[in-house]
Figure 1 (cartoon, rainbow, N blue to C red):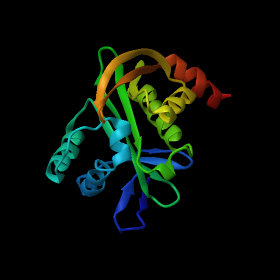
Figure 2 (cartoon, one colour; figure 1 turned 135 degrees about the vertical axis):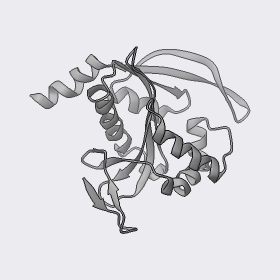
Figure 3 (cartoon, rainbow, N blue to C red; figure 1 turned 180 degrees about the horizontal axis):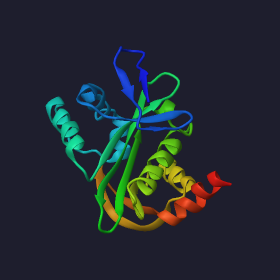
Figure 4 (cartoon, rainbow, N blue to C red; figure 1 turned 90 degrees about the vertical axis):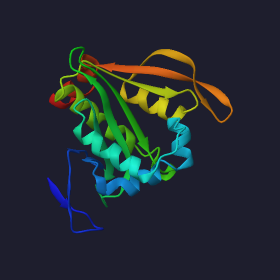
Length: 196
């Protein structure tokens, strides 16, 4: 489905749609937006981003993601006004083992805790399990990101283990928690409910 973006006359392609958010492909035109997100201090802390990037590097990264069959990077936008509030990615897709990694970032604190991330995760999980035929989707979350841990558990991810002192950030080491969801767990929670 194509819609008109309120800021331009260019139609916006929607790959996955929920009730309050939709996920759309990222394009080179989004370089400035994505670049600015990478310098948002709280986003950097929660994602453990340590490096600095140039706009040219970001543009090449976005172009490369479009050519990478093992990943899908999408922007999260609000249905009500098309405002981009974050991004989500399925990455390291392994067709032999039917596994992948998922990551998500909601950029502004004012957009967090409203269920947008939960809805975006469920949309991407449905795509991963139902379209990409994945069996296992995993993620890593740093131990200090309690809101994200709560969100992942609410969605249905299960803790698998801890990678001790995996991140050095702001003069401290932090643990990374490994979580995952399997296809049958997703179906039991979401698909069977939708069918009944």
